[in-house]
Image (tube, rainbow, N blue to C red; front, side, top):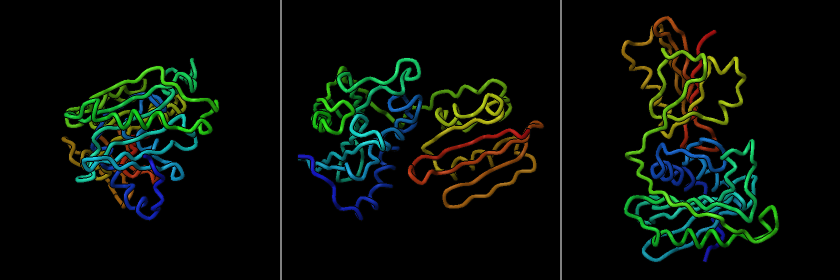
Length: 273
């Protein structure tokens, strides 16, 4: 039985470690679930964000299901993870969603009677072992849904996740963004942030995301060959930057960890005007 997780102090202490376990599970995989072309890890973590709706279910064999809702979207967008209590590793994960990230601008989101359940499996974990996630998906209260009616899943998708061998999708540079500026190789386009830029600014600003640390991002640029000319750099606990020029093009790289997403690093590469 899923029960509310009322140990708030324990939740706060466990959240960063669970976030890291999710990024280790999902790696650089990305997709369009809650929003377009985002890191899967970020979307899973976002679906666990609501403190009020956090629940856990102890299972035989030292396993546990942890679940919650995405804020502020209620039960229509929610996540669950199957965790091995012995080592803290995520064995499988699930997103209940409305495909709002898929052509939502033209088609809109699905409704509560045409929901989608996306289940992700670690190599070696089969569908039978992930059955607790299927059972979890059927227990959302009707009053937590927009329609107030019982949720119906039109399709259930299974994907095996092999984070160690999953590369980031190639980044398409915006029109006008110089090909001479190196891009951090283990990152994907931060689509929602990039789309917020004006066309003029997008020619010289590129926003990315990675599950790597700020220090790893900055180290890549500090070790470029040939090195950056006039390089300057600074880093603190949650952010840092490198700036300099390469082949006559001056640019800066800012990396920052969002407070609500401590296992994700946002990167902004800006070419000087």
